[in-house]
Structure formats: C-alpha cells, structure tokens
Image (tube, rainbow, N blue to C red; front, side, top):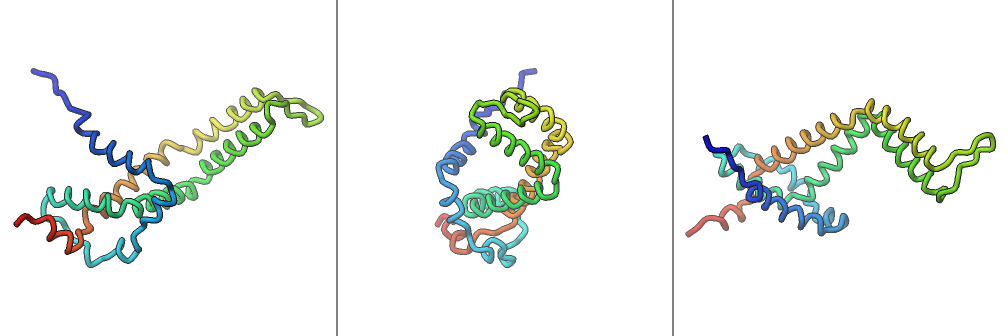
Length: 174
C-alpha cells in the first residue's frame, strides 16, 4: 500500500496570502473597516445554506467582507476569557509588571536596605512564583477555549450569513 502524500503547500498557500495582507495593516486601519452592527447582525440575511458549495462561497465572501468584525469578536472573546479566568489575568499582570520593574533597574541590584538582590535573582524569583501560578491559571485550556469559541462564532456566522443580493447576481454567468 502506497503512503498517503498530502500536499501541505497547496492547502496552506491560500491562508498565507490572506494572512500576509492582514499583517501588513495597522490596527487603526484594521478597525476602521468595521461594518455597522446592523449589517453584521442582519437577521433578514440569515439562512440555511443549500449545500456545501454554498457554505464555501459564503465563508469565502464573509471572511473577507467582515474580517474586521471577526477580529473584534476575537478581541471581545479574549477579554471575556481573561475576565472569567482571574488567576490567568493576575499571572499576566504579575509577569508583565515584574519584567517591567526588573527592566527599570537597568542591570543594577535591588537594594531594599535589609537585603540586596541581583537581576538574575529577581528573574529567578519571578520565574519560581509565575510558573506554578501560570500552571494553576490553566492558560492552555483558556487558549483552546478561545480558539473553539472564536471558530464556532466566526465560521457559524460566515456560513449562515447570506451574501447581499447585488453580489449574488454579479457571480452568475450569462
């Protein structure tokens, strides 16, 4: 039996082109393209697709048309996941603040009067405190939840939201 060869380049080439155009944009231009909420949540355009080809067509259209709205949905779900996982939020703030504080020392030792700590001791202390708290904060399950919730929300919306009428007629061949 011959081994199964999957052409990964053919599968991923579409995504790299799409993501390169997204990476080239700044955040201000990314969110300047937000569609109005009345258009994004237009219940009159929600319908069940007839077949998988229509699902693909809708997803391709809606991912590019509503890309800024989908990015905003991802940001909102990220904020929600951090607000519901306060341990992880605390660890992120602790590590960020610790790294900022150690960086502000500029390589000098921290002298508290009763003790003197070197930068490597401070980094080690931050690591010793942050790793167990980080494991307890369950970042992997939070990231997996975020990926799943964003995927279901974005692809669910993209597959159920029908294209505008004027765009539907422009695709038909005469």
